[in-house]
Length: 446
Image 1 (spheres, rainbow, N blue to C red):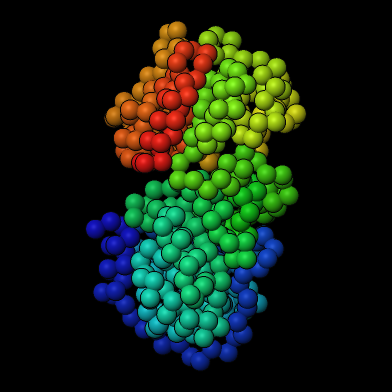
Image 2: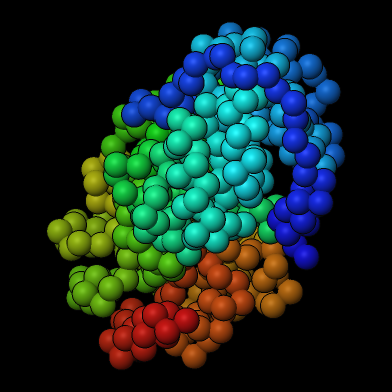
């Protein structure tokens, strides 16, 4: 069994009812149209046996002092060391605040207990519930006047939940795969465009800094649920809130524009050297055009080509060694949408840059492009060795891709974006129309 299955199975075996008095505290609406933070009370997890030993009452004071009024309480007892009693005591202490019961709920009794313990909203995880049971529990929660946060991780679960006859009040996208407990910070960003505009969206898990908060705000999330970072460093919450709002106000960054295209895998055609090939890439359905600004590269171009292709509808990325003033000016002028760089502070460009590296141990936010070392003449790309696949799973992939190997690599690594250059060329400076067509066909078939 995977981790999620183990948690659910043990919870079913150890399920018990608490004896709470009749509820007298009013329900506080949990979800809002204004951006807000949800701070979590969490003692442990399956991968981090002990997160905090601080009393919840002390942590609640810090959260409240930081301006947070929406709380999530983990009540699962076997792996997270939580209990409904925690929720009951916190709600009594802060009746004016809104509380979410976060647990692996599976029956009507769970909802009744949540209501009596003081919850204003409950979490229902799509991955562990059938469509029929999801609808029944959403309906029962609404009968109790509890709001529902429907949680998903995959696109398949998201598509299930948005087509249910009974809808949750909000949808949360977890950046943590509960089957493995591995994090993919870009996963909620990728899936956000699939959520209808009238349903609030919540980013869940893995938030550790203000940069990611800005990306989340820019992507159109209404709320962010912060767990371990909030527990360990509650003093950061005000800065997180500011960064979140800053992202909301910022014009759409590169990741927001890319993910708005709603694809399972995005395609970048790199090493473009002429206007005809840029137009071909755009017409063929590629998402990103890459322009190499490295003088030592045989595919190096100048800003003149960028000006010539300005009106072609495709996202444009400059490939550089470092982030110079010249590169920043290209970004500011609108000639490029993002920077792909081997070095430099990508975070200073506020969602308009990402790292490319051959070091498979390096990981940047929200995602990293992994490439194989170049050949000496930089004419032909090498392929990443199979032993690196587990290290780069789910990230972005470059290096030796062509129509013959791309489908196999997509299945093995499941990258969010693939970057091809020499694999679709007839010569170093010319893309091959037939190869490009075949490459994109193979991507669609994967």
